[in-house]
Image 1 (tube, one colour):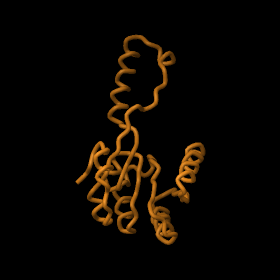
Image 2 (image 1 turned 60 degrees about the vertical axis):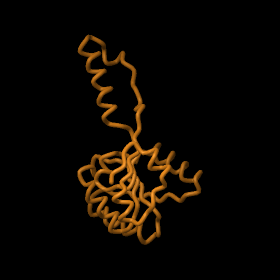
Image 3 (image 1 turned 90 degrees about the vertical axis):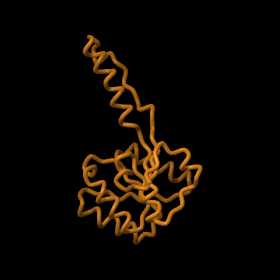
Image 4 (image 1 turned 45 degrees about the horizontal axis):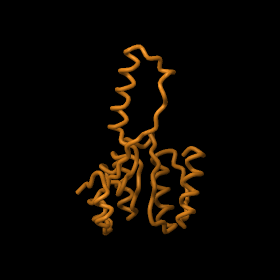
Length: 152
């Protein structure tokens, strides 16, 4: 996790009265050890930072979290589809559509260096009710109503 993101995350956790424990994981072997450490520490949830290294393993990660009885929050929609309890992050579909706009401008002669850098503007909240039920968690109706997608 980049230092700047870690700093912001720690600050947000502290403001909410939460204790944040960071467990860096370099490979899948360390992943099992990290979940065991989380279970021993009596943590109430896991927040998984998006990582290309583990994107292909998202199903295995969700299964491991479920086996440990650990609710997970993730940054990408695909992780919720694979079993993460909840995800909140930028809409990749919206970002890809916006990228097409840039390609069009460049193909029409615009210099890439003249085009502004944009941040994502559309974010998605995805809730996996199958995972909630497997963990015996009740998701408040108000939260379900705000979700962009509910996986049943």
